[in-house]
Length: 215
Image 1: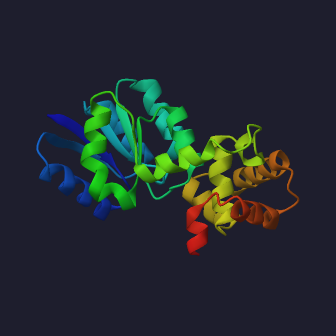
Image 2 (image 1 turned 60 degrees about the horizontal axis):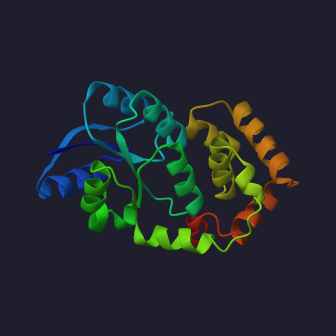
Image 3 (image 1 turned 120 degrees about the horizontal axis):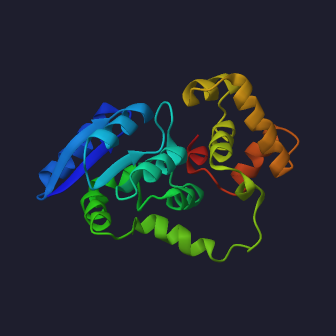
């Protein structure tokens, strides 16, 4: 029996994931969490083999959360389940310690196989993401400007490119507006961009964030 923990801030998503796993044999959903704080408490208190983790939750989240969990519980396998289909997010997630990366649109078809594989010690990447990785092999070896950003800076960059205000970003990340402004300044400096509009154009030109194309 594979014990699984689910962390997502949307109850409907958690219900759907639980339904998929409980509908297959050999899985037990041992606990659920809705934000970064409850996720940390859950993994500390509930033994499990796999954590299905949403990258975007209130409070401590994303790459930082993966890193903290792996520092405390290196044996716990993490399957990232996210709306972000971008290669850069996947690369950063794996570097932080994730064992699998699955987009929510692929979850209904691939979740059982992904959890099974990483529970057995393997690594899982959806077919769509594997194709993106393969395509990236043809990219220039030198680092592009956005690759100089830290994980948090890259997250703030994504939110700025998506049109969020400093205040909105601060509220979602549970930090002060001054902190977000500092991140913005660092991002502009590292990427050598003069203003926000240049960041947005850069993101669109390099097709970094798929959800921008849908806006």
